[in-house]
Length: 171
Image 1: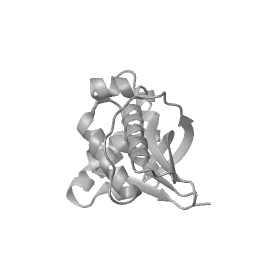
Image 2: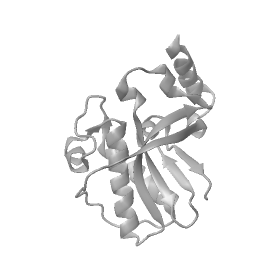
Image 3: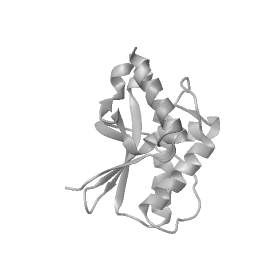
């Protein structure tokens, strides 16, 4: 019964509309990720959304989803293994965004990883799962230092539904 709602929503998304516009997030806590040595060359023409889209492209090109992957907070390991679950997708995506911001000399944003609750149409999706791996979901958070606004980026669900960005207003 728990999964009936999820399956129904997924079927509806395929046939009627795109679910990516209906995801929202609630940050639970910041996740500390170690130093990485990921090399990302070049800059990006355009703004923060262009940087996010390029980072998502690089992340989804490099990684494939594996619920059993190890070392998901070690970006150097992820770069070699190519396997990750949501923790690794967020860590890798953040590493790419951070490098692209640095390459563009853009100091307006702080990028961090957050454990978060995922909502679809306002429903907490975590209530349907008991497996810790499915309950603990990590996302990328891009904080605008000037305005206080945030962009929530879900790299692992973006792999399935297309680019998922959720916005909050500033201070």
